[in-house]
Every structure is written in C-alpha cells, then in structure tokens.
Image (tube, rainbow, N blue to C red; front, side, top):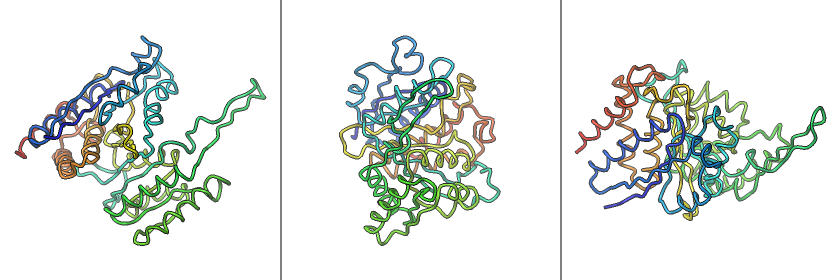
Amino acid sequence: MKKLEIAVVPGDGIGKEVVPAALKVLDTLAEVHGGLQFSFTEFPWNCEYYLQHGAMMPADGLQTLANFQAVFLGAVGNPQLVPDHISLWGLLIKIRREFDLVINLRPAKVFAGITSPLANPRDFDLIVVRENSEGEYSEVGGRIFRGEDELAIQNAIFTRKGSERAMRYAFELAKGRKKHVTSATKSNGIFHSMPFWDEVFQDVQADYPDIAARSIHIDALTAFFVTQPQIFDVIVASNLFGDILTDLGAAIMGSIGVAPSANINLNGKYPSMFEPVHGSAPDIAGKGIANPIGQIWTAKMMLDHFGENELAEELLRIIEEVTQAGIKTGDIGGKATTGEVTAEICQRITQLS
C-alpha cells in the first residue's frame, strides 16, 4: 500500500469549493485502486487568516509543510481584504521560492466536450515549462523619491543555472512526447537577458540531437498560440513569458477554470506544490458554480509526479468523458454545479473496479 501524505491549503474564494471536490475524487480513486491511500491534512491559511494573525501563514508554516510529500493548493487572494502583493508573496510565492519550486508546468490541449474559442483548434496538445524562481519576477530593485521625480527599478535576474535547468527539464519532457522544444525569447528587443537565454538554450540543445528545437520571439509566439497552436509540443519560457503564455493557453482551451499546474522541486529536499491556474474568483465564491476541473486535473498532475501515470491518464480520460457528456459548469457552456460535476466524475471512477 502506497500512502501519500498531502498538505492541503484550500486558500481563498472558490479554492474552498474546488479543493474538497478534488480530494473527493482522489479518495474515490484510492478506493478503486486498492494499492493507494491518501492522508490529507488541511491548513486554514488565507486572507481571513491574515486579518486575524497579520501573516498569511504561521512563522513555522514552511517547516510544517516540509514534512509532507506534496502541497495541494486551491487559490490565494481576496483583494477586498488583503492587497494581492501581500497575499501572494506571503503564501503562494513564499512557498515557491523557499521550497525551491524551480519548475512550473502548465499543459493545454483540446479538451473533449469543451468548445475552444478558436475557429479551428486542430487538436493542439502542448505543455509550457516555466522557469519559476527568477527572471522578471525577482525581488531585486527598489523605489526612490516621490512626486514627479519618483523612480521605480525592477531588475530581471537570469542565471545560467536557473535557465539551464528549466531548459533541460523541457528537453527531457519532450523525449516522451512529440520530441520538439520551443524556446520563448525576445532577444531582438531585450538587450542583455534574452541573448543570454538564447545562448544557454543553444548550449543545452546541443546535448539533445534527437529533439527538434527552435526559438521564437514572444510576440510572434503569442500570435501562433492563437493561429497555429497545433505546431507546439513543449515550450520553455522565462517566469514572465511563461506566466502570460499559460493564461493564453487556458483561454484557447475554453476557460481558465480547467487549467492545471504543478510547481516542481528537483532536488528532493522539499515537497512539490500543485495548484490550478485560476484565481480565487471572489465574484462566484460560495455559489456552487465554480469549475472543479482545473483542480481535479491538477490532482492528475500530482498523481503523475508520484509515478501513478496510468491512474493519472485514466482520471483525465474520465474527466473528458464527463465534459463530452455535457456535464459541465457554466464557464464552459453547461448548467451543472461544482458538486454535480464532481459526483459524475466519482461515479465513473467507481465503474473502473
């Protein structure tokens, strides 16, 4: 019996609805599988916690999470209570940075039963490997003066180590897919960091002669996501470029509510963290209409991470069966509630036994 100890942080807004839905799916899978068991420990860290304690998590929160095999996160943020830069940097980004979650994975594909806004999506199936620790999201910089002379400086930090490990991860991932890697660059406009990024990519590419590779400027790449998404397999991008591309990837799927992601620790020292791409959506929180698929697909990525690949693929197949049958939330053209979608997925899982 494989037992997985998972720290659960539902967070804010619809996180409190879609996380329990995904946990129900995982427990149902474990019941059917027989050789798998989950132990979930929930932590109430969110913006409401911040209002009570002055912090998004306790001082020893990271030490607590480090004892688990993975962190399963819902959504962070409620700008009506706490400014986003405080909530995100106090919880989500804090975990990413201090747990060395240096890779962010976000897939996008034509999803059965979900209508893409593209007139001809042509069965695209891609995954973005986002460098997750440095780049444009560094903390280096500052502000001086006030008034008309006020000045803000934000430095983008690119290291060979950080860039190369993201690129190598992308090439290794491509080996089991369509054997093609695209690098997102902007070396014709960003003078120092992007030519450096290109040089590292060329160095890494030389070690993978069997993998096709090319670099595309981010503006053209963004356009190709809309006009020719089927040409892509694995895309490696800096922190900012990867962030923007993956929101667009969610959009061409049909809804950000279905998009999953994984934050991966490579050195084994800390647990990896799994979270959907969507935010806390306070406008629909508590209405029972949030799409649980992003969180459930995120659970599928967590299963992959633990080597349960066959079970993970079976779960994704069942999710697509459900959407194809028309059991969908309103954001993707259906009328089902969060609970109804979850119940249907669980029902179909039980039929596997």
